[in-house]
Amino acid sequence: MKLLKRYLMFILSLGLVALAFIWNKDIGVKSVNTIINSSKEMMLILPPVFILLGLLDVWVPRDTMVKFMGEESGLLGAVLAFLVGSAAAGPLYVVFPIAAAFMKKDAKFSNILILIGAWSNTKIPMLLFEYSSLGGKFMFTRLALNIPMILLMTFIMNHVLKADEKAKIYELANSF
Image (cartoon, rainbow, N blue to C red; front, side):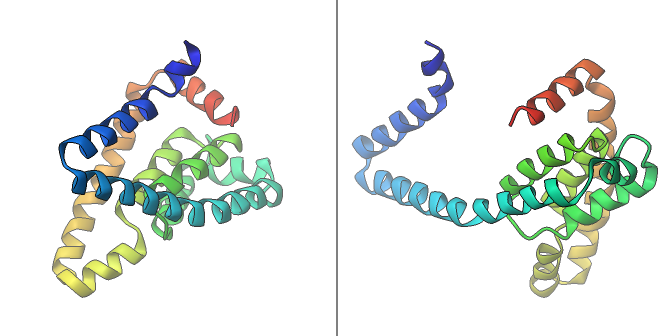
C-alpha cells in the first residue's frame, strides 16, 4: 500500500498517456515523445548540477554560508540570494536541489525563497532574450513588477509558515 501511494502520480500519468493513445494515437505519440525529450534534457542537466552541489558541500564551510546567508545575514543575504538566482541559467527544477543544499548549510528561509523567486523570474539570460526580442521597456516593466512581487511573496510565505513547518521543510531537505 505504501508503495502504491508513493507512485500514485506516476501510475495516474501512465494511465492518462494510455488514454491519450486510445482517444487519439497522434496525441499519445506526442505525449511519449515529450516525456522522452524531457527525460533526456533532465539527464543532461542534473548530473553536472549534483556535481556542483557536491563541490559546494565540500568547498563552502557551513560557517561561511551561515555568515553570508544565515539568520543574521540581513540585507546582504537577501542580495546574495537574489544575485545567485538571477545569475542562473538552468530550468526551474534545478533550483530545488540547490535550495536544499543551501538549507543543509543553514541558509535563512527567506533567502531560500528569494533565491527561488529570482531563479524563476529574473535570470539574466531570460532578461537578455526579452530585451532583444521585446525591447527594453517590456523587460524593465516586467522586472519592476517581478522584484517587488518576489519580496512580497517571500514576506508572506515567511510569515504565514509557522516555525515548526519551516523546521519540517529543513528536516526534509536534510534527509536527501
